[in-house]
Image (cartoon, rainbow, N blue to C red; front, side, top):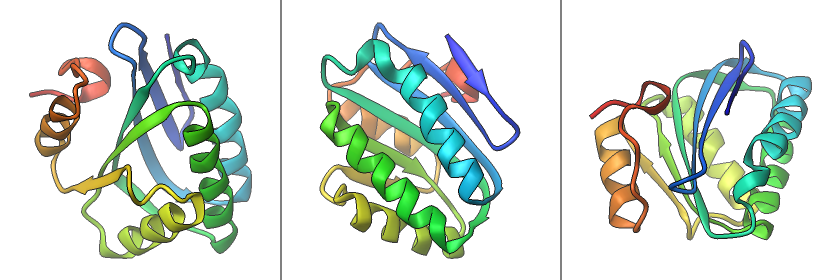
Length: 141
């Protein structure tokens, strides 16, 4: 199963309980709300057990201020529905600051990790007990 829009894409690996995401461009409130709705539909098959997300944010440019609140609520929803790890690939100082505020808002600082490369993120996911599929959604070893 996979979903996408011009601002994000998902690839759910039900077998390994991991959702792979890619985030693109400049986000506004509508984008963030649509993302959460699409995400919920996509991840529903695995929310009955512990799961993780691996998010490639290397093409994310910035977000309007209200997006921090919405994504914070999204992260809180994820934790309420058994997310145990959020692995984030990011290399932009501006969006890094926004991401940290989102973690704070969603109260996920303790389960969120940030890396500069996909390989580091995949390694972290594996160390957390997940078995990442290196070929999914452009995440290659």
